[in-house]
Length: 214
Ligand code: AMP
Image (cartoon, rainbow, N blue to C red; front, side, top):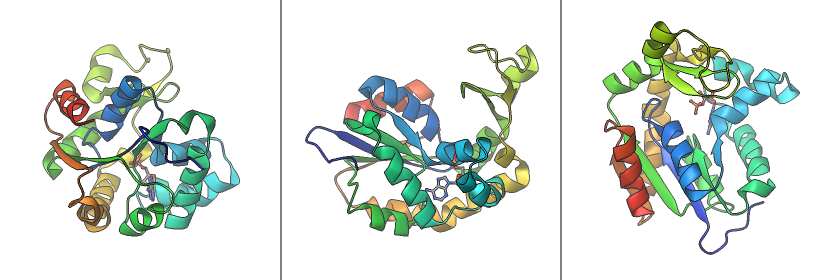
């Protein structure tokens, strides 16, 4: 398990789907030289590799339902024990429930909780449009694919839409966010580590504002 060292960054990013968590996490990862750990990506990777765990969680992930707290927590604990996370890490997608936030207090106290706020209209528009490379995870938009085709400009892989970014599943995931994840913000809200940002602003502006508080 990752030890909580002095000066180590343990960042939590919280916000609805489409708020830019993944994008900001990637930028912060380069800036701080620590890995981004996306629990959604950990799930998708298990599914893509057809592991036993992947088969177990596939239905929940594809349907936009949450994976049970104990399963996701075990996956994350294993990941943050990896060598590259020993100097700190950025969490994208965890904690998603108050139970996860409470349980993780004993093994992972965040140094900053970064909340990205956007309204549902912006969230739906961004999720509907987002596309990513199946190989290198390069992120782009439906508009880019319409103009330039589905070949990834970075690795020549294929750019696709995520299964769970379909209109019905988007709504399920947003409802879940409001019902289950929003209370996680209240859990951290009164702490000094909690910082809120307007996720509707441009990517560089949000990044600069976050970097400023680190
Ligand atoms: P994301 O890429 O963060 O949107 O996550 C994709 C999917 O992975 C979610 O819809 C859930 O099924 C699952 N997932 C990711 N993180 C968590 C978490 N902390 N708790 C439960 N399920 C999760």
